[in-house]
Length: 91
Image (tube, rainbow, N blue to C red; front, top):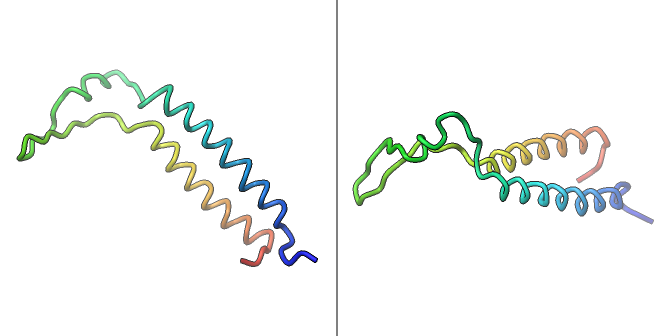
């Protein structure tokens, strides 16, 4: 007798999808490091702020891998919450 009705399905999802997502994110993260625009090279070189101890701040493009990780986490969190509620799984 199984105490959790969807335990087998949850294990499949927890094993397959994070692996596929990790492989896609790794590929994209290694192939492109950031969004490139018209002024991407200029933004990487131009110093916006200078701080003590010779620290400098630039307005460089945000890395694509971080954008995908943040968006993926938000999608997963919302869908996990909704599907847990819709399917009626007791945590």
